[in-house]
Length: 267
Image (tube, rainbow, N blue to C red):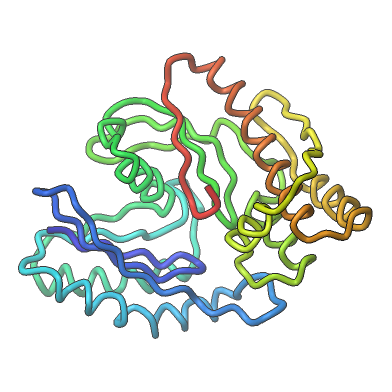
């Protein structure tokens, strides 16, 4: 029985994983973002995580008869210089629990957690022990990764993705244009179901790299021309999907035979 903790920028999360039955129960609480704003300062995220963590950890502990280990996200990516203060909130709680209970503390990156979670939910955990390709599509990250096994964890090497703003940033800026709540992904997704126009801006994909900053201008121009929120929402999502699809095709040609998994809050 493993307790997992993650304090990313917009959600406080805890999960109980039962290795015997390969089942998990998740407890989460989103961080509040004021209307009209496009995110949170790290100091505000740290405060809200500190308030939220007992509300997600206590019910998680109530579901556990025994704790054999505690896992926690300690930084965004497993690379030098990757750091965000909000992850230290989760780490401090996880460290305290693990030391008090005298059980192992397993430190991972937020990105490694996304890859593992997507493989688990897709029913393909065996890929943790095989090289594969993975997209990490989140609020601040749009990276195409070569994932290789490293013991029971994985090493993620960036091989492509956006060269400027992330897919999540484009989606949230589109949401602000349409006066939608933040984060805007689910709201854009719901709106786009009523769209009928199929226009798309074909993002130039050099090998496995692309830029999304120009798409933001195209979305604004499209909205100025049509003025229909559902159409603008669908247009923005189609442009992101086109770029991801082209980069994926190029990656599959370069790494033939590797499976591809999509992970992250925007995926």
